Image 1: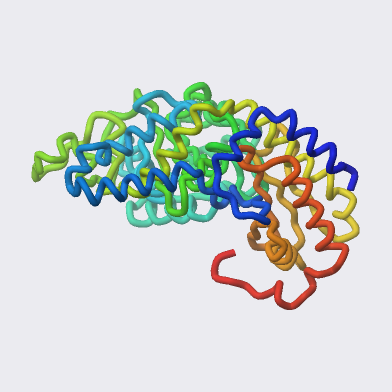
Image 2 (image 1 turned 90 degrees about the horizontal axis):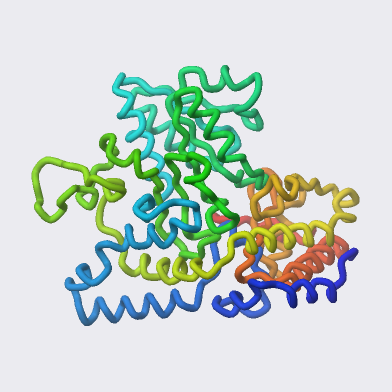
Length: 414
């Protein structure tokens, strides 16, 4: 390979984030390049869940008055600095799909004309489009798709945004890793009288996000990827402070009520970010996430971004000479235009290559059609890990082991 193991180790010696790896429970003999799907387990999370189990045993119902009930807002305040939000602007609740639905209803409900046009981007993660379609179908609204790869800028802007009320966009594309200019896009959408809901699934914890600085008013995201909250960890909603009191969100559950334990018959939304809560959450799940989020107060996000880009570039440099001979297309954007992943296409053998790598302990993931994704999570990956993963990739190709029939057996989850 063009890059040597010694040079990778030298990068590790210079890495200001290197010690964070000691805080994660990582299996031996596994090189984990799938943190863009599910993050690794922080050691503190196991301890936190055990403590909450003990609290449940000892305190029973009293636990709700000892930190359980206000966890969605407390965790939101822990998360806020990571995504460039202020205190009281983020609540951790539900999942991305439900949270998009809440924001669509909240925004369009303020329009007051009974109609509404929702624009989703083609090529985005499907759930964003699915829930926009469902919301529009049952609410009597119109749903449109922004054609995949088409820009919101330039000559196509008027055609795409004409009559639109809400646009749902991902800051980082889940397939290619392409990074949108949040500030510029937000300005364009607002200038045409529409609102934008940003999906931060592949950017929160992967790179510096500046919601306030970019003028964003609404966003959602998940915590089980780069934020390492655990499988099924709750998502979050961001609503800029000045936009929190303008109406109802449609999933008006009792935890979003102004006085939930008054048990009033009629719903009155809370006067702050709490109105975007719905019902009872899992104290156990929130305790694991809180342990992970507490770590982020120590993370220099610009150092994290620098390391992320350097690792993904190292991986590509190690493999670049193999792409043409083996029919692999590198669709990863340039350094300043991508998130924290490398995206490679092999429509014939991509699935089998990923399975052969997994058999060697190199875990990436596969998405149809033909997409091999490798996520770079700077808190628990070293440069040597990346170099070794590339070495295995090279050996899988050059040995032809990916052609073994067992590597074409598909499971329910890819």
